[in-house]
Length: 126
Image (cartoon, rainbow, N blue to C red; front, side, top):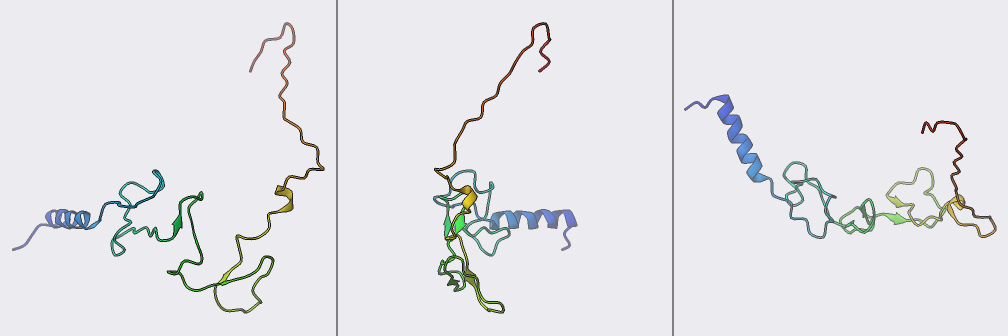
C-alpha cells in the first residue's frame, strides 16, 4: 500500500507533536520560557534544561559548582590561571566591583533639573 506524500507528512507531524511534552516547569516565573517550551524530554527537539537555574537573578544564572557540570577550580579574586593551564576555572563573579561604580562619600551629589523658558510673543514649537 503506497501513501501519498502529503498524507505521510501530516502523519509524521501528528506523531512528532504528540511526542513533545508540554511545559511542566515548576517554580519558573511566568514569561521566562516561550510558550510550549520543552523542559521535560531531553531527547525531543528544543529541550531547555532547567537544572540548577537560579530564577532569583535576572537573567537566570547557573551555579558553576552544580554537580551535573564538569569539575572546575575556583580561583581567588584577581588571580588568573597560568598560561597553558589545562582545565576548567571559575574566575568570577566574586570579583571586586569597578571603582567607578562605587559611591564615594567625598564627592558632591547633585540632582538633574530641566529648566524651560518661554519668551513673550514667541510661539512654543515643542
